[in-house]
Each structure stands twice: as C-alpha cells, then as structure tokens.
Length: 86
Image (cartoon, rainbow, N blue to C red; front, side, top):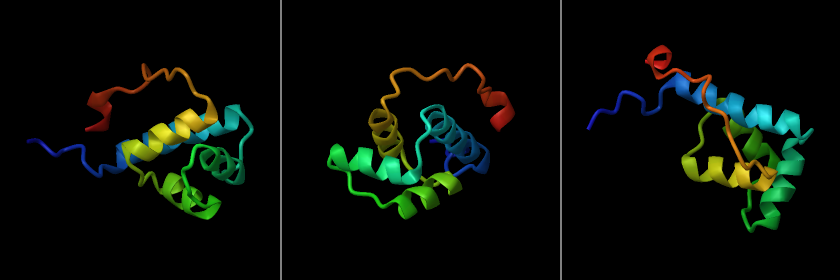
C-alpha cells in the first residue's frame, strides 16, 4: 500500500483551509463549533478543536463531524489538484 499522502503537510494545509473557510462562511468561532458538536454528542473543547484544526491534524471522522455540525451539505473540491499535492 502506498502511504505517500499519509500525514502529508500539503494535504493537512488543505484540510485546515476547508474547515476554516466553512467556519468563516458561517461566522462561527471554535466556541460555536464546540457547542454545535456537543448537540451531536461529540465532546471536544474549543481549545482542542482550535489546536487540531489549525495544525491540520485531524482524521476523517472529526472532519465529517465538523462538516455535519456546521450544516455543510456540499463541498466543492474541484480546486484541489492531486498532482500539485505530491
């Protein structure tokens, strides 16, 4: 199995940018995100979310939970080019 993309800083940067862009669109803070996740039964502190998101160090599960908590229904990933992220 090719692990070239695992823990790759370029991909982490893109993941962070996607989450932050969606937060900005909705004028949400990390405290807001903590509250919204809490409504779903996901217990994360605002500080923990800020650390994980700002570093890009979060898994698919948290990414999906955050997207659902914010009410994101569609993501446009057409601007990502895997050739540029190698």
